[in-house]
Amino acid sequence: TKLRELELNQNVLVGSIPQTLYDLTNLEVLHLRLNLLTGTIAAPDIGQLTNLRLLDLSINDLMGTVPTEIGNLVQLGKTITV
Image 1 (cartoon, rainbow, N blue to C red):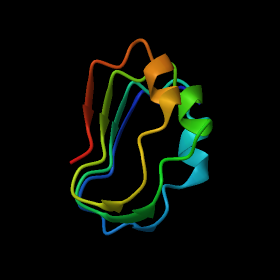
Image 2: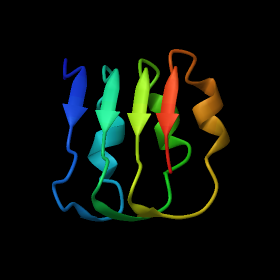
Image 3: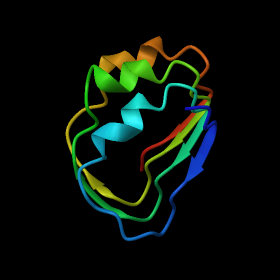
């Protein structure tokens, strides 16, 4: 897909981060703020998003550590995970 920006803020998404989001390899901006996401950020799947410049996971119920694969996302300039 050619999708470059996805904003799903305040959509009451429940459960883990959908696995299909990790297949959107052209994504540059991903906003998942203010949902009811739980679980962890999937590693190594997050590493597939090599074009990601901004990742907003704030105000969810995610747990665990930030995967080291995020360090490989060299385009990533801003990550919001609070």
